[in-house]
Length: 182
Image 1 (tube, rainbow, N blue to C red):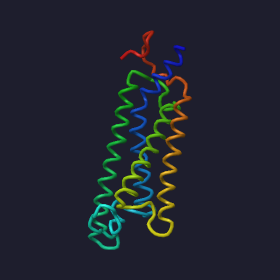
Image 2: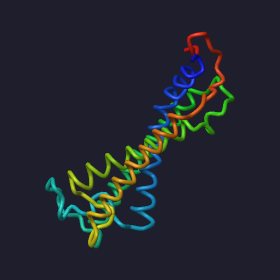
Image 3: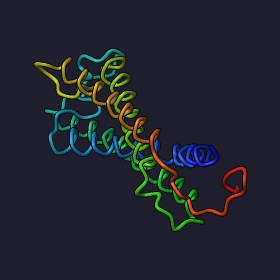
Image 4: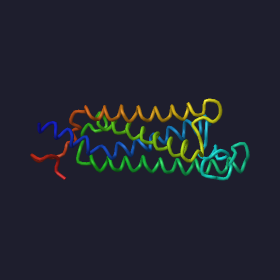
């Protein structure tokens, strides 16, 4: 009983850093893979059909590409800050530790959940509500956007399941009978 409570406490302690890291890493995958390497979309690449009336910034023109590059950079800066914040939060949790946090299922479960959360929020807000860009514009656009959301939901479910069954994280902190010393 005390072991289960301890495992639950340890999983919760890595939840915030894991979710924040997952959000940042999910944003990196989206920005680096979809925006830059595959060039399927940019931050404002669908503003000709958006839902909020943003001026059109076609990526086939120099001014349009410059504006999309600026917004892609702002997006990457936000995800970079999320990763740094997640690492800082994790470091603050394990500085008294030489533990096995980086190998723990709890941390990686929360990272997957955070990545899925990124996909769900970004997909719902940017692709569907604002309509400022889509995963891949053109034929099959809705299927790509829905696939992005389904992938995000699967990551959240997989991450939740992974962290839920995780054994004690072993933060290697001195403990009291009631749990980790704060």
